[in-house]
Structure formats: C-alpha cells, structure tokens
Length: 269
Image 1 (tube, rainbow, N blue to C red):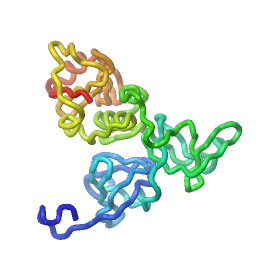
Image 2: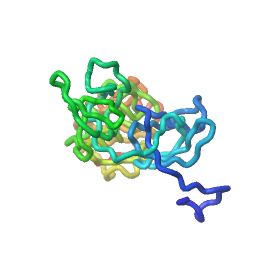
Image 3: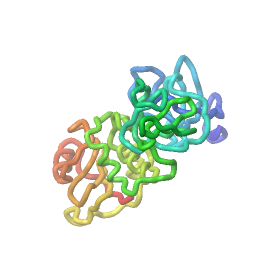
Image 4: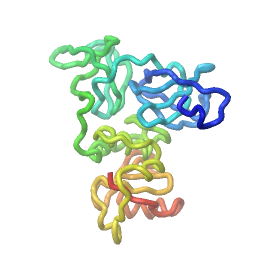
C-alpha cells in the first residue's frame, strides 16, 4: 500500500506481520525451489508478508527491506519482541534444559530469540523459550548489548564456508559478512556490496600505496567487499578459498584484478 499512487499495479497489498521460524530461511528471486538464492533470513527476523500462493510467500525484511520468496513453512505469526541474540558463531536448541537431550535446531550468530525464563541443570545455565526449548545461556546476550569491535566479530567467522547469498555462520558471502559483523556491533548496513559501497560509513582516499588504510576500513571491488584487519591484511568471504579467510590486500588486488579490475572504492564505517 505504500506505493499506491506512486506506481501502476493491478492491485496493492497492505501486508501483514510475520516472523521467520526456520533456523535459516532461503530467500529466492522466484517462487520455486530451484530459483537462485537472493539472500537468507534467520529465525526470529521480523518480516512483512505480502502474498502467499502454492506454498510460497512474498515477504520483505523489516531490518534491511530486502524482498523475495520463502517457503510458507519458514514463517510463523509474530510474537513478542526479541529479548536476546545469539552471540557465538553457532549454538544448539534443545527440547529442554539439558545438553544430553537430542538437539533440535542449530542457530547462527545473530539469531534473535524471545527468552521467557531460566533453568540450570548440572551446573549449566539455560535460557528458556516460550516453546519450552532451551539454549545455553552463555551463548546469548540481551538485545542492545553490542560487540566492541565488528572486525573481531568477523574474525570469529574465519573458516565459515562461502555461500552466495549466505548471511550466517553456516555459510556467508562477502557482503553478508560485513552486514552480520557490523550488526553485532550495533551498526546496521544494507545487504548487498553495491548498497554498502554507497552508504556504509564515509568514502575516503586511502592515500598513496594505500598507506592510510586501518583496521575496520571497507575495500570494494565490483561485486565484492572485504574488511581490513590492519593496514595490510584483508578478511573476506570469497569464492577463491570458498570460505572466510585472511589475505594480504596486495595479493587480493592482484588476484581479483585479473578478472574484475582494481578496487572501486574505500569506506570507513
């Protein structure tokens, strides 16, 4: 309904609130299982549901406004506001507060949860969810408690497999790494590398021979982004190693330049 009167369309839909129920929901560009992956959304993420047909839902993320199709089984009605967020790369959900019980979901760093209680079993503290499920209390932090250094968050994801469209500690792409790491540090950025290249922080000149680069600076190529670990080393999710890895910036520039040219911009968040 927001676009009514601004664009032409056969009909306009107000949309209704929903929430991602799957640990990771694949968001596709078309309503079919073989369509390419556009992005992903994590359990607990709030979305607006605009259309539903034949097992597929057209949704929009309330966090970064990304749109696409998800399976209808990936959604649930929206409940209370999230109270906590997963703060370790991966953690398990148990059917009750006991690590010896068969695990249920596996959750990624950044997953939002509604915690309703607490329990302790054999000295291990658990956070309880409304469903009766439990997660390790030490693996979550209250919403609003942020990491001090987003680069350190990215380093926790070293070795995570590269996945085109991935946003999680199970598989992630270059801009997904930037988005997730910065969100854990309390800074929201847009999803794709071209969006980040236009809006994340401030553009700057890295100086002669890149001498002014520092930890946390973003380096952009056409369709790619990496994060500076220090003045000379990059961390990025990349299709060369097919994982999140460290690489000297000079080597990355030479290797990437062969196919895609040199860096197109630098930004300091």
